[in-house]
Amino acid sequence: TVTLRQMDGRPLGTATSYLQETTAPLTLEQALSAYGHGAFTASLKPVLTFGIGPKPVWIHLGIDNDAAATQIRRLTVGISWLDHVDIYVRHDDRTTATWRMGDRLPFALRPIDSHVFAADVGLPPGRSDLMLRIATFDPMVLPISLQAPAQAASAEGRESASYAFIYGFMFALLAYNLMLFIGMHASRYGLYSLYLATFMLTNVAYTGYGFQWLWPTHPGWTQWSQPTLMILCASCGLLFARNFLDTHRHFPRLHRGILACIAIGALALVGTALIDWQSAALVLAFAFVTVFTVLMLGLGVLSVRAGLPAGRYFLLAAACSMAGDVLTVLAVLGIVPFDDWTFRAAEAGMLLDATLLALALTYQFREGEERREKAEHLARLDPLTGINNRRSFDSIGESIWSIARRNDRHLSVIVLDLDHFKRINDAHGHACGDEVLKATANLLHQTLRDSDIIARWGGEEFIVLLPETGLAEAVALAERLRDAIANLCIIRQGVSIKITASLGVTERRPGQQTLEALIAEADHLMYQAKDLERNRVCHTMEKEMEVDG
Ligand SMILES: Nc1nc2c(ncn2[C@@H]2O[C@H](COP(=O)(O)OP(=O)(O)OP(=O)(O)O)[C@@H](O)[C@H]2O)c(=O)[nH]1
Figure 1 (tube, rainbow, N blue to C red):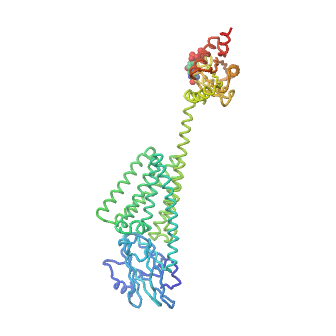
Figure 2: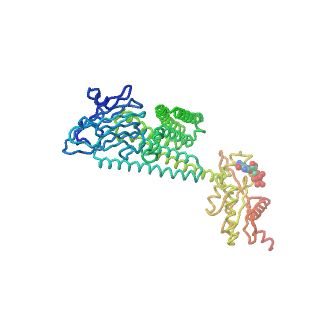
């Protein structure tokens, strides 16, 4: 028996006693008579639990109103998914109030607009008895409490606010990822959004908010929504994992196995729906979610072991979600004490899961961008010397050329070719030739300004584009380069290798049409230098002097 003071919203299980029906359903009179004969068992737990799909249960709670006037207290059975909740209030051997509710009956029959089962009970002074009959295919967990209606309403308000926070947070993640999906056509963002959306729907269904807000006139769907959405959500999670971890490439057998698993789950669900076997659908859904949780964790472990960069986030996310799910299931099955924290652990786990996966997606995106930038950068460089290759020179050179042309600015070019390079290769080997090419590129890099463009033009040929540089200055620079190359000391296997280079230098002339023509001129001059015994700089100034002379 509970007194008014004990009616503070906490579960009153230890004040109750119960009787489970064995064969035929009992009437109220039969249950009362059984109670009178002491057939009820006193509950030792504050929250009664009877596992999945148990026989219907009768619960008795004695109430002592020690005040002088009638008191109203809100009776709450704080779980949403019970099929039938019949409540009888007895006073002076009479039934003073009866309510029938449950998620097999339309929501409108509920006396209080709540996502769980609640009724305001009038308690005259003295002793009253509450008799409840509860029947369900789902896990039967019964947090029964009494408290003043205003208090109950404010507790429910706080609870709703916490759900609003969870849904708001998840909705923001969902909307953001949906936009990424639409904008980038990357299916992993779409699958992640789908996973979040189905999780939210599953949660809305099992917390009873779905029945209260979304489908109050469809008790049939309320029944089937839970197994259906559980299987749908787990399937979306697996599809996301397949895509996110690229299982097709890394774990091909698992990739196919996951799809088979989803297909079996979906077919089995359709089968149970066709024969309207709801208890089997529930057992199937719980089994599927268990397989899902194990698979997600296993995929996380495998991807970390395979060194997949985003694997750590995934594993941590899967572990958070699994810990939350396990705690909630244990609470619902009565294996660990049922309270707000244990019951809502799955939500906390999923919040962490969703956040970590969002981080993992961002990490993966950043990594992809870095890879792409690196590949683009590498595609512009000569792999041996690390300076620009011809393709990259062409694109940079063209823009410098058009600026110089439009603004009529100085622009010079040097073409440099190493002399008798074939001999170096022949005498010291190809690897040694490579070393010489690298040393030459290095020297160019160190001697020239950052604004000058250096590139490897061909085998042992280099090109330098000198913006804002007149011919005299370019020729002086070319001479310095020639001299530095001639003095370059490359020692390989104790042998000192000497090299020289021939250089052609020219400057853009007003009216000259293309950069190509300018380079061809410098190239021509470089060949002139080769003809003149090599290790020389030839330039257009000489040509002009010759013409003048
Ligand atoms: N080691 C090495 N050799 C290269 C590379 N690219 C081209 N070569 C070699 O450079 C040599 C160029 O020879 P040639 O075109 O006959 O010119 P050269 O021997 O320098 O003679 P001149 O240009 O007339 O002074 C060839 O033997 C090519 O195989 C490279 O990346 N590494």
